[in-house]
Image (cartoon, rainbow over all chains, first blue to last red; front, side, top):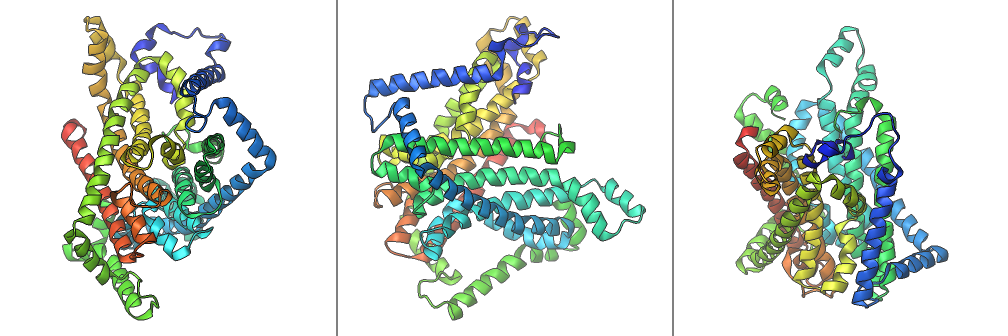
Length: 275
Length: 266
């Protein structure tokens, strides 16, 4: 997004001089640090003005809480629990959704019959399943995993179907003309051509699952990051609440950066196609 | 979708069959399973779900809860619409502002709406303001990001032409940049309304679960009460279906609005 920032009204004056390294004050890292410094300063000032350690702890207190939680190992314990659930849920939904997506993408009849069911279930958000799933699975490990699998399933399935169906017909016909068999066609033509779209689906699935796990753990689990933020809220230990929230944001951010990098590595041929 | 089904179906009847067969079979299997195999009296089955639906509509509870949730969503969405598009227009037109705010926004954007629930509970208590605050937060980012994206792709020649002809800066923003960015903004609005509807259910569920129930109202709260107090699974399924139908209606409504407001995009 930052790359096309130049197409706007006010950027006319800022013409880059070619052949010269950007000044230090123009680099992205510097700007990010500057922005966060201002953000922290405002937070600190507001916290000092509010002067209520439970309502709004100062950044310093939150940093101390974060350090304490890391030192006691509690932070990593909850992180490990949540990320394990996340990984299990993503693996399960990939195993369920991707083969089904290939099947529905390749078989128009199956798609015509199954698509209505998908479209009926899809509008019911994963969150809305929480009360029923709580009754079925009880409070514990299964509930967050179930909710995440449900949330991750649809973007993966729909993107796989779209990816398979949008495979260039010419490629398929060319391969067929040259006598490529069904298995080789799937492995050498359709899977590589559909893979970039599946990766997009996986990124959406991750984002949805990471949002859903917080809700699921907050309401129906005795462990994990979602549980931790609400637990410390009830104990009115706000610095720890803020520290855990920061960790939730950080993990989400880092995973997204990692998935983008993975996407570039795994599907370099999809670069520049807008996805 | 249409090309594939056209090659499969022959008549309108086979299309109807395709649309209804699998869902109908599942409903029948569910009904039979509930009647003969399920050991628990409370097991939801389609017939009981339907009667529960009419009961809940008749006693007004469902409609009231739905209206309360929708009101919160609309209020939260309206706040985000104003804040998100205004900030988006400014960030899209002033790169300096955008460069400064981008890192903060990118840091907060991946943070799930439910993650701020504890803070919201500390600040606003367990009533309508808390639920509305979460919706506002959830709806804000898609609107902002899509507005910035739309503005950054506005044809520069249009802006320069307007400036050359002496149109003042605020008018350029309102008369040139805003209409040109409208498709992106409307896409953002549709996405953010969908997210807002999910978020209100989550917020009401969460607030209900953590405040002992009964204080916040709304359809999410209603579901939690059915789960933890009356243990009425049929009613929970009714609520789930209603939530899904509303999500579908919201999506359709925004798509219709997009077609109406931008007929040139057909």
